[in-house]
Length: 122
Image (cartoon, rainbow, N blue to C red; front, side, top):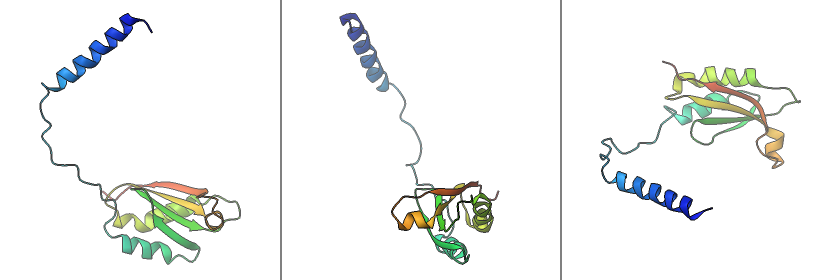
C-alpha cells in the first residue's frame, strides 16, 4: 500500500476519534437482559410431560431444545405443538428446536430434526 493511502486512512481514523468527542452522550437506561419466559419451571414441566420427549433445556437466549428419538423423519409438526403448548408462558419470541436424542447420547451434537419460531401471544 502506498504511503499516500496510509496517510489518508490515518487521517480518517483521527477524524472519527475527534468527532466522538462532540457527539452527545446517549440518554438511556443501562441495557437490561431480555427475558423470554414467564416461568421456566412451568415450561419445563409442560414439555417433559410429553411421553415422546426424553429431555429439554433452555440453550442460548431465546432457544428451547427438546430431545426425542426419531427414525429419520422430521419433527417440525411436533415443534409447532410444543410452541403452542408453551406460548402462553412466553414474554418474547423463541425458537423451539427438536434434536435427535440418540445423537445427543452419543456425543454427536444436537442434530436438528425440527425447528419452529414461536411468537409470543400479543
